[in-house]
Image (cartoon, rainbow, N blue to C red; front, side, top):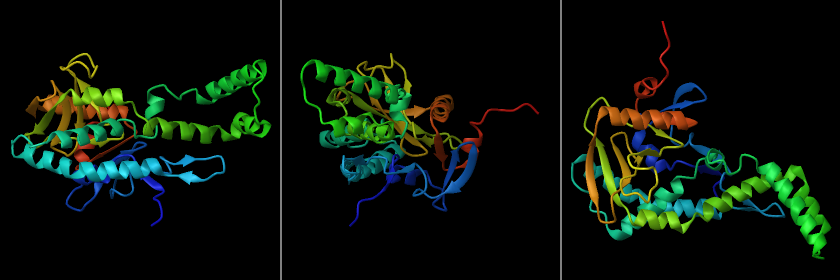
Length: 282
């Protein structure tokens, strides 16, 4: 079987929870609202592909994500089913660890995740400057550098590939420190009971509420909608679990934040998206 070249940055097992009776999503992208299937959105060609010196394409990160998604999908289904019945999901420690790994990686999967963090906004300038600094250092310390390799590294035509590879490696090697912090936190399960309220999903779907914003603070909440009616968040300390009935104002805050920070959003209903659009004067 050939490696996939279309890489979803929002897993289809999550998107599938937001489809309507026709198995379609309502989507807003670049100012336009339309309906489509889950295979056609939140996807980018070769997003997680590393390109080596010879131009060979390595898709190990995408394979890693596929395995994480396979492990997490049944846990997500359990969380939704139990929470909708107002029952604490029976999540084992192993399942919680699996969920935390998924939660951690999902936070940086959007194509512009690092740009939003300001990490690669000036990549070309930094790459050129650091390459020049290394060239000077090598010359001063009699370090031999392959002229062809140096030419390749200094060629601006290759900067796009280097930027791609840097992002892939950063996603692949996410810090264990954050995972350890998540392991020390419990889980909150948010449920919407108001029939007219529903969550949206976006390419930047995490919303910080309460606390200082630092996940080390047990009071900090970081909500992630996983269905139109259910969201999850780190909560309290390790063994803490809590079912929270979210109010209409809380749902609106989560949705409006996702709307503002995302490039693409999706919903089960068109009206939910339209309700988030700026109101124009008659």
